[in-house]
Image 1: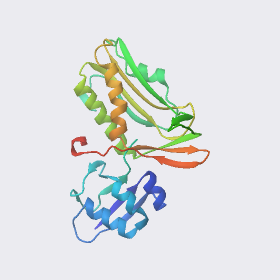
Image 2: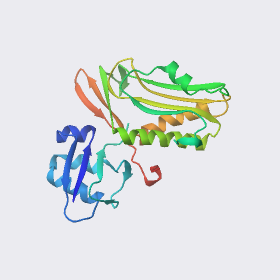
Image 3: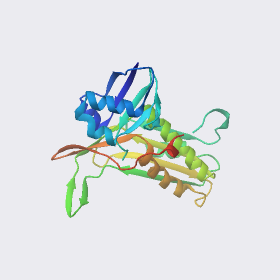
Length: 241
């Protein structure tokens, strides 16, 4: 059977390609089988595959999960809502190749009952103190597994609503592409009727949770070269929608 494999960040760089077709023996296989076949055919990927997260058809997958003909399986490093009549408050979850307009987002998550909006805005930092040294960054390049990233942003929004039911509008917008020092990288905006109804906590949870389960990575461009910045959080079955 044939499946489609997507590779991101470091794996993509090592393989020299972001997607490939993989032929597997038999009519059924597991995620573990796919890892083994990939490592055998592309031994240079072996170490990174061992540490990579897997997703089958845009949902986190684990070693024993089944893979069928025609499935899409993605491998990537740890990463640094609803619709229709049930939607009462505005919700924005998207990837943005263009600069983020903060005022427009605040207006978009504001309803007549809103009395407070909390906004978290991430920026490209040019200098970082690390282990008694100064690390310089010239730019960052953000890459995402796009359909899964948006789906997981919606999951984060749903988790916010479950924890803080008085939160009204929610916006989660992540930049992609090359960003210069000082440019905005992400905005999390949460509105509520009053400041004590969860908007502060929800915005903080939103950025922390995004860095756990939304498949977005950054490549740091410095005077010494480029390198992918990978996280450490490994998803569990509880991170599935």
